[in-house]
Length: 309
Image 1: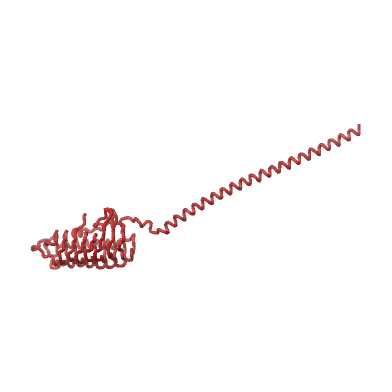
Image 2: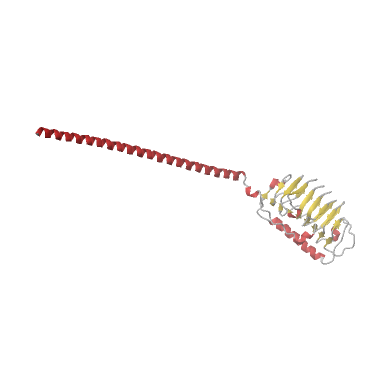
């Protein structure tokens, strides 16, 4: 019996060792599985993070590229906002707008001139209206076969002198207004040679003279306005043509000229000439607009008509 008891104890001890060993194997297996799962989850998370980072990088790159493209567009077109500038307000001519020609020192003509509209001269008197062959003794005005309208001079009967004084003051005020406009849309365009260009509405400024050897186009609507500030002389070549398109009107184009204006032989011009000195029209030149000079206007077989109001 004693021997059997010993064998029984040994058997129990063996079974205990086997159970412990199995438990350890299962624990190890579970730990391994847990480690595998953890690694798998970590890989999944890492992959997800990588994908997320890749997407973020892609989005960031896309945003950066978009920004870069936008910056490139702005760099390539620095005046993008100036391609269609806001049309300036027109220059108020006041009572100077009652005359197709207004001058201070004289208005002279040779050849078959044809003027449609009134001519005013002040402070010079009627003796400086030369070449018009006035038809009758003046009262408040005089007439000429060359003018479809009236001629007014500072020495005519009242209220003509006072009216002309006001008109000349309005002319000078209009010139100062046009010359004083700030923030030009275009500066020194063509270095002063605007031949062949198409001008959109806006304020233009040159410190130099401006020339049109053969032609220029004004393109805009009926209410659009152009103001051209010219620091020296304005010269239109022989046969040159100023063309209006898109409904642009001569009454809304203001040439502010600090020097002399010279319109070449047979040239055709549109607009309001606000000139600080002489306006000279050569043989056969035409103007749809007004010639407002702070000195004199000379004509040679010139045709001038007032613009539509």
